[in-house]
Image (cartoon, rainbow, N blue to C red; front, side, top):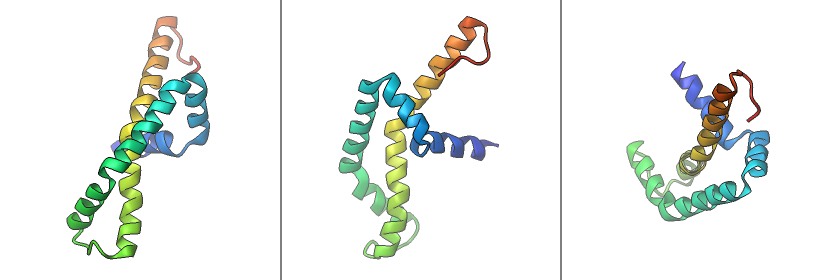
Length: 108
């Protein structure tokens, strides 16, 4: 169950375009800041994290196939760290709003 929750969370944060559109519309400034943070983190730490991931998997750092495959994983992990707080704060705000209204389904 934990795996499903984590996978859904990553899907919502990184892949579900209607959710991204909603976040952009509801708080364009926060969305822009999150995207900028993702770019900053990628520029600052992508290569180091990729090298660490290659070493952890005992792969040659010069292997272009391994770099491409693990590079996607590392990029998603870094983007998730930058973008997840926006999704989580939006969902938390919706839950609090729902509780305050005494309702179960309040629009996000």
